[in-house]
Image 1 (cartoon, rainbow, N blue to C red):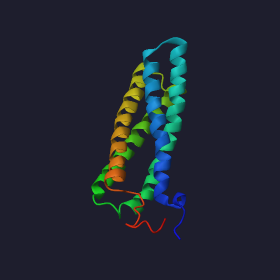
Image 2: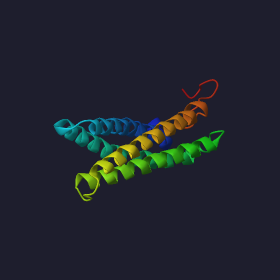
Image 3: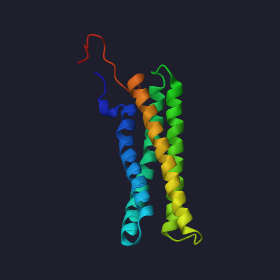
Image 4: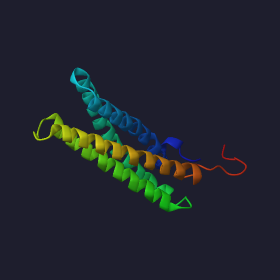
Amino acid sequence: MSEPTFWRTEVWHPLSVHFPIAILLLATIAKIVAFLLRGDQEAFWQKAGSYLLYLGCLTAWLGIYTGDMADAIVSRKICDPTVLKDHEIAAFNMAYLFSAATVLNIILSFNLLKVWPMLLRLLVVALMLAGSSYLAYAGHLGAQVVYEQAGGVNIPSTNCAEF
């Protein structure tokens, strides 16, 4: 008898990556909207974007961690491990860009750097846009690993006797 599907380590990665994908894309949209508005609306969207950014950044690193756990299992089963490596590189680039945006956003939130706040806000948005690009690319490569190479997928025997 095999172990339950949930306890397979390579399954934890897809369970943990979809949340930061949605949250970080929403954070980017919220920060862009905030950049275009003024007054109370700007403050609301800035705060919403900041909270989404912090939550998304933390969960992105959780996705990196679970991806490393899955890599040890999946890399032995797929035909082209270079796609998996490119997926990992794009994910790290995404996490670093959103982490840099998070640090700059915290600096802005606590008013630690009093020079050029508008330029810093623009830099946060630019980092988030670059991070979103890497997020989309990492997602595309992850889909290739799963759907083209059956990475992390349990392939049943031809007669499905195990079911």
